[in-house]
Length: 235
Image (cartoon, rainbow, N blue to C red; front, top):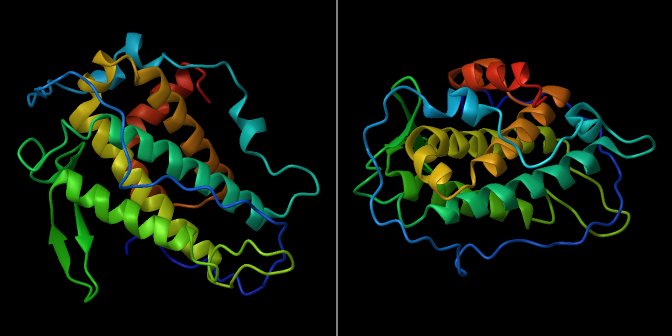
């Protein structure tokens, strides 16, 4: 998986107990009344000043993502990864009736980018937007609920390959957000959810930057949005 390289971390770290709370991927999702998704995107509407500046709260993201004093780094990364997974899952659910095999036959993103799923044999598989999202979210949830990867019992430790798993999760979550912005931003704006998506993206990217999780090449297709948000002091 491109960009998902191990950081060579061999130390095993201890962590504090963490309560498992995960979203049921098969449960009810947010509904909306839109029945058609505009397929023609002229430019990148999410870069328009009136859109990119929207957010739900004024917050110092640098302070928000920084490791708190006395807090274990692996525990902090695990806690935030779970939170990002939950919020991004909610967003993909909000447009689930619009992101279909017909409207999104491929998992597209800016710059004519198409994301492929990698099967158990390492073969790249082209799949629809909703199928890619389902594969990714199901895979991530399996990792988050695996006691050997995200331990929750008092006194247990994170595995030596923990950072690699975080990188893999972040890469999939980034792909999903990139697809949401490219293929469904107009829908999200019509639902008045774009301030939430902007805030979530800015938080996600600030956390990614703080801990150097993803290779910059993996997120380069959204650099224009990241730069625009920086200019508007989103982070």
